[in-house]
Image 1 (cartoon, rainbow, N blue to C red):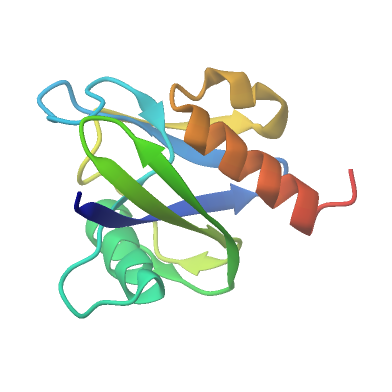
Image 2 (image 1 turned 30 degrees about the vertical axis):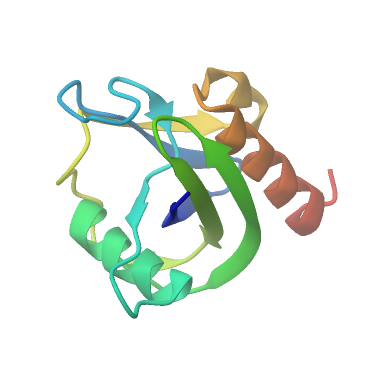
Length: 131
């Protein structure tokens, strides 16, 4: 079984984080409210992929980046998701990929449709916050 590697980015602004509502024409998880990200290209590290996807999808450049966790997720394909938190960035956020972009407070994590994303947020809170 082939495992598809992906990079996810948790854009953090104070007590909230950015999520996307996936376009309905996406083959995987159409319409889902999810942490943005994308597939690793050949030869790319998870961190390089995260920087590329962040620029392609939101037109911003990461400043401060912290590794959060790597999780396995089975949907239509088996995915290994590498999550990073981006707490500083430059540029204005633009939507180049999603149906919609939404800010959720950390106490709204139940609005994420993918259980793996909820685990990643819990890990971020466990590692990087004192609350």
